[in-house]
Length: 88
Image (cartoon, rainbow, N blue to C red; front, side):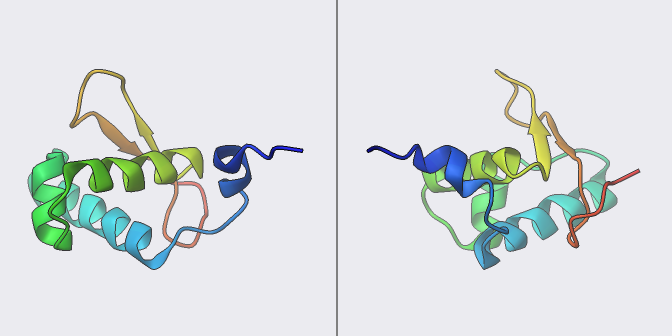
């Protein structure tokens, strides 16, 4: 019996690191009216690997906190607030 770990991860709340990245996205957008690049997210969160940044963004997307547009790195839309409520 094999469990798809990705689909099972959507049932868990965001990790502390994922919440940190969500806050970075929210703060950056509030100040600049655009989203940060993966590199800027990594620098702010003290993550040197861009693939790790991407992995956290994928997790936030799978958990319904953000939406990303394929092929456009900075095309991120915040869908929920930190408490999980829908963003208006």
